[in-house]
Length: 91
Image 1 (spheres, rainbow, N blue to C red):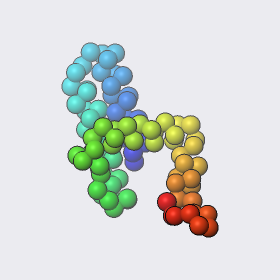
Image 2 (image 1 turned 45 degrees about the horizontal axis):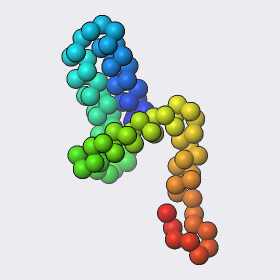
Image 3 (image 1 turned 60 degrees about the vertical axis):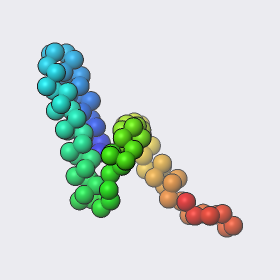
Image 4 (image 1 turned 30 degrees about the vertical axis):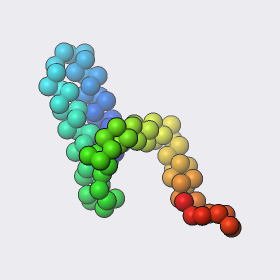
């Protein structure tokens, strides 16, 4: 869902630049946030960080988007949820 929303937002920004339609920039914001918030509500069942940490939330979405484009997201998730080695605190 995050990937769909971010991809849609990027596409709308590009189209806005090509055709010179500033209203598409508003649509880009709506597209990105709609899919992300829907994902948090229905799938992740947590609260998005958008209002608490807006810059980090946006940066995180684009980082996740880049990892998915590169086919590296699964490895990143596995790295972050890997079990701790003996004597190390859990992540």
